[in-house]
Amino acid sequence: MRPFHRTALARLIEEASRRAEDAEKLTLQMRGMADLLVESDYWAAGEVVTERDVDQALSAQRRRIGRTSEKLLEQIMRGSVAIATDGEEVGQVNGLSVLQVGQQWFGFPSRISARVWPGRAELVDIEREVELGGPFHSKGVLILKAFLGAHYATDVPLALSASLVFEQTYSLVDGDSASTAELCALLSALADMPVRQSLAVTGAINQHGQVQSIGAVNEKVEGFFELCKRRGLTGRQGVIVPAANLQNLMLSPEVVQAVEAGAFSLYAVEHVDQALELLTGCRAGQREGTGHFARGSLNERVQARLRSLAEMSWHDDRDHRPLARGRLT
Image (cartoon, rainbow, N blue to C red; front, side):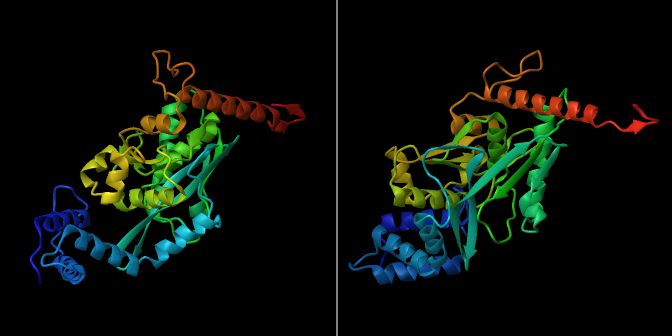
C-alpha cells in the first residue's frame, strides 16, 4: 500500500475509537480496520493516502450496506412514516432507535406517543400487550411507572390510565434507551404541555428520574441529523443525550461541523427535568417545603392533573358502592 499521510492516520484513529464506542479507547477488531486501510489505498490518486481517501472509503462502505437505512429515510421523506422535525405537539416525542445490518448500525427516529385518562394506576405498554416489546423495554416502562408514582403521587393515590406506543413499528422493540423519551411524552400529556418536535431524545431512566447512558449513541445522533439535513437544517434541531454518554461521542465530521456552525445542537442532561425544560421551554420546578412544586412550573401542572384524576376516581368509587340489605353502605 501507499504510505498514509498523518491526517489520514488521525482519521483512522478516530474511526478506531468510534468502533470502540469510546473516545478514550481504540478497537482491537483489526480485520475491519485492515479492510478500511486497503480500501482507502484503493481510492488514493496520489503518492500518499489522504484523509479524503479514508473518508471516501468509509462513505463507500456505508453506501454498500445502507439500503435498509436509505429506504427508511425515503419512507419518512415521502410521509409514509410520520416523523415531525418542526412544530410542537402534546404527548408526542421523537425517540431514537438503531438497526443492525451486518456489522454496521444505523440510527433512525421513531415517534413515541402517550395518552392519559382517569383510571386505576394502569400504564399500558402497547408494545408488550401485542408481544412486540422485549423484556428490557418492559423493564423501562415499569421503572417509568415507579418514578411517576413516587415523584408526583406522594399524598394521593396514583389514579390514572395511560398508554405508550412506538408508532408505525411492526417488529420487536427492545431496550430501555427510549424510557426517557417515553416519560417526557407521558408528562407532556399529563401537563397538556406541547413538546418541540425539532428535538429527539435518547436515554434510559431510573426510579429517581436520572438519565442513564445508552448504547449506539453516535448512530442515533447521526440518524436524526441525516433526516434533518434532508429536510433542511434550521438551527433549532438537535438531540438530547445522557451526560454519561459524552465520553462515547465520536460523531462524523459532518455532524461536528454542523454543531460548530450552530446548525444542529447536542444537549447533555442528567435528569428528566432538564430534558423537559429543553423540550417544552417551561421550567420544570422543584418541590417546595409544602410538598408542592413551584407555582406555574411543569411539574406543578403534572401534580395538579394527577390530583384531579385521583379526585375523579374517589367520586366514582362513592357513586358505585354496593348495596346491602336494600341500603347504601
